[in-house]
Length: 239
Ligand code: NI
Ligand code: MN
Image (cartoon, rainbow, N blue to C red; front, side, top):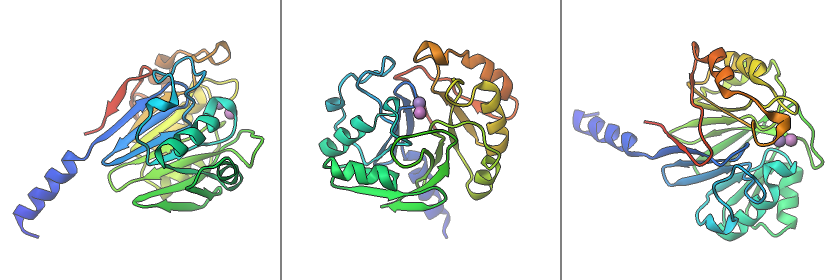
């Protein structure tokens, strides 16, 4: 490859947009190149969400929901998919439910498996949690430019180490609220196992049961990993 071609490639890679916005709780928007990916988009009734109405969301490529608890936005995910034509991704039973509710493009998978939607690959991780429809899960989402692990709601599990053997995680999104999920201490152990380049804590301070100091989490992990504590509505831009 000539130097000119290499230089062009570098510029192209540099110019790809890689931006992750916290929408409060476990809800995130990842804008990577032309893709707009939503994770657990709890919009309606989410006291931390900067978007007040799903109708404000005009573009979405992929909408992933980790499980059907109301604070993870399955209802809103269905609306976003219907409004934008985005593809819904979730465990088989949840994807079936989305289809029943009128979502045209749904892709169901299950723990340990992988699905592909255009240039995005989604691996379904386990999540130690509960749900009414199917089972809860987490997602490793890989685009050509970035690999994100959104853990969903989960307690700590030691197989997180194996996830790091399968995928090099650029950004890990982990719950730290305790009560229903990992707390700061467990999430710090998760970081040790997952070895992400960047970690973003979530699922805390939305309601009294999950009150936490994210700085405590930061203190526990900052030696081994870059910690990004976001404010709801604020974005992390990855170079
Ligand atoms: Ni839950
Ligand atoms: Mn939850």
